[in-house]
Length: 97
Image 1 (cartoon, rainbow, N blue to C red):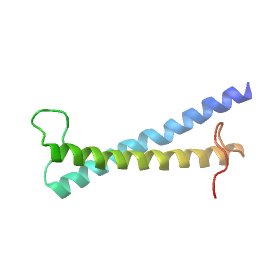
Image 2: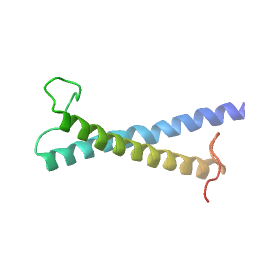
Image 3: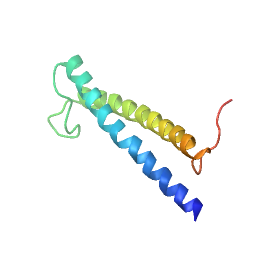
């Protein structure tokens, strides 16, 4: 029973970190795009009126930003879980070289 509770707690904590981080990153990357390019980012890069250059640049920029944000959020959640429980979340092990 404690194992199941640990998995549920880890998922809740993970989502608690991931959702606000994702929202913040999307706002930051959109603002950076607007400041750099001078127009809003493509709302739908697949739309026929969107230029390939803009679609590819937006996909690359937002993809990298979201991937880094996921990594940062997961690390923060794992550290918080370890602080609260004294051990790493289920499925994670100590890393390092």
